[in-house]
Length: 439
Ligand SMILES: *Cc1c(COP(=O)(O)O)cnc(C)c1O
Image: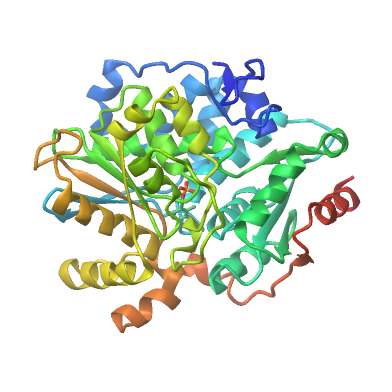
């Protein structure tokens, strides 16, 4: 399998090149050149397959740089937690993607990448530097996923004062090969600085840089696995609608990629907070990236979603085709809080603010858009639950007037001392620091 750039100005590369480079040299994002179809036997036996079985079979189509045994071993190790599908009744389901070590779906991408990268680079004499901008959850998943991995250094940029206390503790207390840079700016500034580093030729001649953001195709591949796994767990026959709480749109893009391999889906709902450039695009056909706004679902505070380029490419740049498969809506913080309260009261189920945005979108869709994807009333709607509610206790506790238990795997980082490097939002400062630290 070769990988092409969304800007179409780079010759196709292998999986390992695409993954280790992150961004293509022409500034585009990598996508598979073709879409192998999963065989009928895969779909027939899906209900009996574990997440790890699915992970191995699907990666075999996309990752050609590792032997079967090594690939299988790394995947079993990376995906050592479950992704259960929970029914809320009335054909609405929640796919819980927060059972990994940092309690957010980013664990899928980070754990997969760390093991695949390490396996692909075995024996290399220069350390690989993973550079990632994070609005919270990416960083903690990457820190945990890559912690102590031989031959890899991790550098995380996060916006000062704009991540939750727990997120900051998760980012800044890992130690070992992980450094957190506390940037005087927004998430978009962090993302801009990281992009500048990847396209800086002189820097890339000195350092082996790679990304762990959803600009990296290696992160999207493991995110396809749980879409299939959800279908396998459904006990209803109709192709479902997937509702994806979105920020950089990597998660939704992974769903579209799964569909390209033959996965049955009626459509996708793109649910956002006030950062609504994609819902706006879906409605009016124009894409206007802008600065991000702060919300209570902060991992989705993205004003210029990088995976938009992939979505456009997957639909051959055809707006009408995109619209047929994706419906979008955005919601305010007060609507999000209302949704958390309602689900708690009516279903005795706790949702984090990101998942609640998804729930609210499904409600709105059902109330006013039913049939948009030519689906029937009994079509299952699956909300991807992207984080554990305990990560957002500061938002949720006042809403439900109750305390949330913090799972043990989250507690361990709370008592450790924060360690970060303060940095301006000027790219030159980042460059200097990288050269000083990793050369
Ligand atoms: C990263 C994240 C999102 C957004 O996912 P994208 O792939 O960037 O669209 C949603 N919810 C949570 C909890 C996240 O950490």
